[in-house]
Length: 521
Image 1: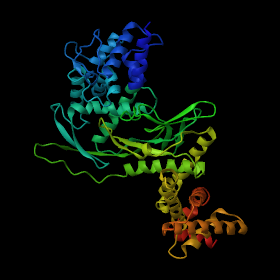
Image 2: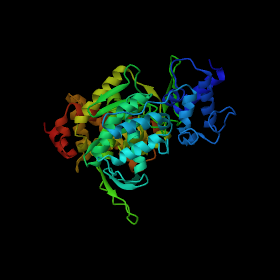
Image 3: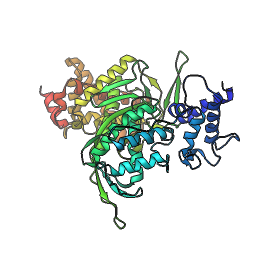
Image 4: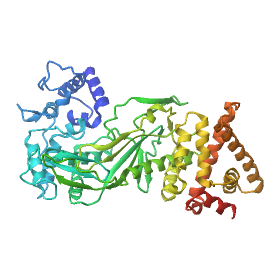
């Protein structure tokens, strides 16, 4: 059994590096730990702080960032030595029938699994080892991949992608890139990845790499993070026609996984809800991807990038639909803020992703909110409704609504955005106040009395907006807040009605056409 100090070392390295890496390097097999496993946990914990115990079984020159490199004295990486010390066994060499490329990828992945978890992509993992050399030669000789049998490991090619990027890559990194793509795919299926999970994904990752080289269009994994709202433990996945929305895994974004937890709230029962700035929920979908390859020469400049495909736009549309569906589910101007954090598109033959980060999630105040099962199911339903809705005909109305609800700190700005949503739905070039308000009254109210009352209140909101825009300074803050909330309520109700009950109006391309149609019915 290990000491309490060793147990604390394991707790800390799990916090720093994640459960998958720790389970692998400690060769975990049950709840008990041996003294040797405690030594390894102590070494890694100290190495993370650049401190090294005198009894370390791995040479002191190996710092944490170098543990994926080969120790020339043993022919193993530092991580592999630590795993052996903890009681782990060397993996069996890869065997995949007649597919030597797949077998070589499996062998290298099995030998360097911990390094892949520690350093996503594994640029330097096991450099110089027999398994790495085998993988490099197998990839070079594969007729369905872009190099050839006599290529040197430093030979490079230009890679031009359909998302508008272009760059070079070397033969030495193509094998690790395919393994990294398989690792990222495995990470979408469970929170803690095992070696068998990675090996199971490798055949598909290799097939995609071969298809990309042949010029085929493939589906690339795309993900985006959202922060501020948590799903109930009874329903941690929302199905969508194009993919799913689920709880965020620690492996979704290794770059941001160690960002601090930014918001927390204690509930009436004493439990605490914590919302992470890096994301509480992950949108998971696919986008179209294709690549072109060109030989590199000494004097050749980078070839021009192709016009970007719709991949990024499609991912952003998914993010918009999910956030708008949440707004329509809650139907409340004071609904919790659901903010985008990061987005990435997985390059199927690269160690990295096309990645972006949204700073607003760090800056905007959020009240962490856990949904009920009923709310989660309603959100799931609205995601499906919006997938069929012709939202493009509303221009920037969805974006304006989300800005007003989640991004605008000043109620004046939120009021202006909300009224712009009204005008995007029923706006015209003449008699705009009457036409917009009357059309909304017809859409949202049943009786004449209800419509007249609505018309009066809506004109009041318009009047308030006009006074503010033209510089009036005698308006009390509470009146501005009331007008903002009313404008948002109407905007939400109108979008709910259009997308769910009146798709015929939504199919019309302009606000003027929609106004004419509904007023003349």
